[in-house]
Image 1: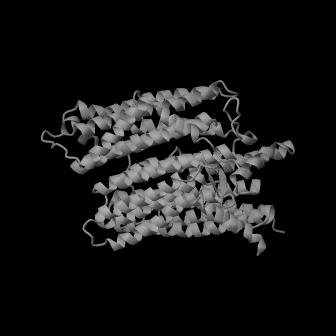
Image 2: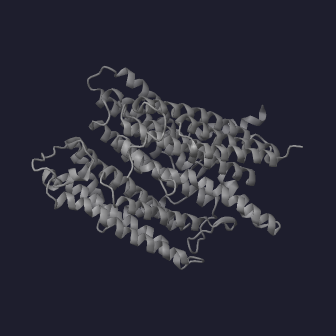
Image 3: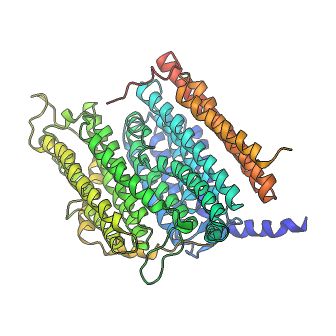
Length: 518
Length: 101
């Protein structure tokens, strides 16, 4: 029995660093109980959303008092570091915004909103672990926790054909993607003899030794397994060719959850991708240049670059023809995953920082854009672009806010989206002069052309709102809840302020670059 | 004598058959069974690598976790198929294809 004692001690020690996650775990369970307790209460929605916010606040408080000491937890399963903590704050913000929006809206019937909040806390918990997973087992478990709850919430609207169809497509694509990832992991485990990401990295470093033939064979097997693992991550961030679920799920899911899905799990997917690629498949960045090299000569940065280019091109060109705003934003979110992948393909600290800044800015502007969709859908019952015609006269606040979000999504100055894009392109440009970096110039060019294409469909919406006459002559003025207007004002202000004053974002991400490397 | 290669071949076959099942089946339950085949292909690999290459229990524990998760995924998947049946009166996935542009 003695041999188990160190393991138990390690678990007890790690539990001290696991308090935010424990708050979320027990919060999920408590919310399910409160859902039953407040069954007949008149103020049911208010009480349950207050409870959900309290759970998130408890997790936030525990996260705030936790020092960002980089260390391994639970015998190498998780890592606590500044990088993970940055993303955890992002997930808490996404969760809190979703609770605030869902509590006011009509997307969730009051009798079922308690279940939604409880399951949402479970997703936040899964994303927390995605950001800190350092073992293949933990990668798989956390990804599945987020996915499985998402399948359920995507089909949350009962008796709705689109919801049922979206969740079916989600569960099938998700099941195949995670299965393919698991198969790749099994080969990675066989090739390296370990499931720890850090140990995988150490093993790959030693692969150059040995006869040429065996090295070549190992490398082929490695490339196959890494491509398979990429499938799981790519499906989570909705990168081509694993994006097929995205538009249908976004359209079928309740809109507040769509907004959450487009920022939370996407950011979690990028956190996981950075953790896998930059610790297991690349060495540490060299202090002189800030660049890292891919281990064992596997050309994964180029593969990610190609995926990035294809993703943004396909997302943008498909978005051109969309008339449903939710689908348009779904394809735009695919395109944004493509832009963000540019940061991952640079394998440098600057690239990681660019991804973090972009996900931060994207959280505000995309939730804001979906909030306008919710607002208009509540008044008109439709998500068609026709119902946005003349919005500037029917609801000026929403129209101006939506225009700000859309220009920010395009990446125009002086909006915050420009700061995010500027950093991504800067990270790519920096790489052009580096060793073997010629193709980065092409990537930057494709990215720039795509930005121009995206301007077209974003401006189409802006034109409908400000120039076109309303679809019907007697289109009523839209009345929006004060809470929505307050949120729209807050988001717009944040985008304008951080579009000009980048320093806090850059300082925060700079301080959060520390990745635990075993 | 059964070697590691035999197990890997079985694992790869299960994986491929699973993919083919998912790609060709029209019955939603059949597709979910294909997903199970994919997961079990990976499980065979994990246990085989554990026995022949690494020793210890890591691979076996991994396989156990996968079995549990596969059960959870089947539960969620079947619940969704049930809701498809209630709304579309069929579980043929060709009919559950309203959203398309």
